[in-house]
Figure 1 (cartoon, rainbow, N blue to C red):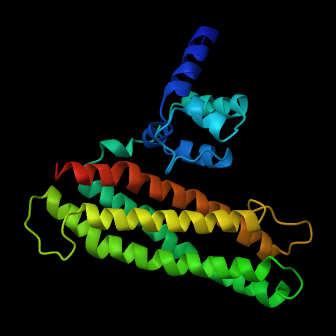
Figure 2: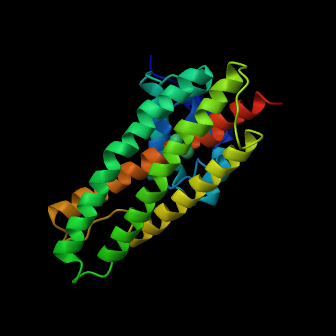
Length: 242
Ligand SMILES: [Fe+2]
Ligand SMILES: [Fe+2]
């Protein structure tokens, strides 16, 4: 049944009053909409949507229309906040870690091809390839540290199993991972500026266009991945030690 205008206006008010991080945690399709409107839901997830729209100078009407369209199709994804910790860890590894491992080599391949074909003629190509290399060199060891050290430690806490570790309190590796998340996001800021927010120039060849489209996809997934860890996983893990 179509909503009345009063219902729609109430729904918009509810959206504007809800924290950005909470909206994404309840429906992960919203992460993509926020990325399109430059709303930071990773490290700026603690403020209401109304404040975020002002802070990031977003188009309120277009953003609310996109969110309302999602609401009305009735296919909300399951809120990851409700998942038990072992399932959440599996989800992160099987979805986001797998994505990084599949896509990172392609980004390297595209950017190296671009250097060979266009590196001498266009100033942005070599620095872009350098930042993509730096991003991959940071992210791959980051995934390994999570999978081999932090995630097993969180699982041990969840299962109340005594574990030998060298890092002391679980807050220490969590802080280290958050630090690395910020580093990765800062690299992406530079990539976004260099590529004019992943917009290929008119003269761009196919590899160039595919590279920019892949970078945009990679950024959206990385922001979602970091949001899940920073705002859902880590608080749950820390709560186990409280
Ligand atoms: Fe991760
Ligand atoms: Fe991470």
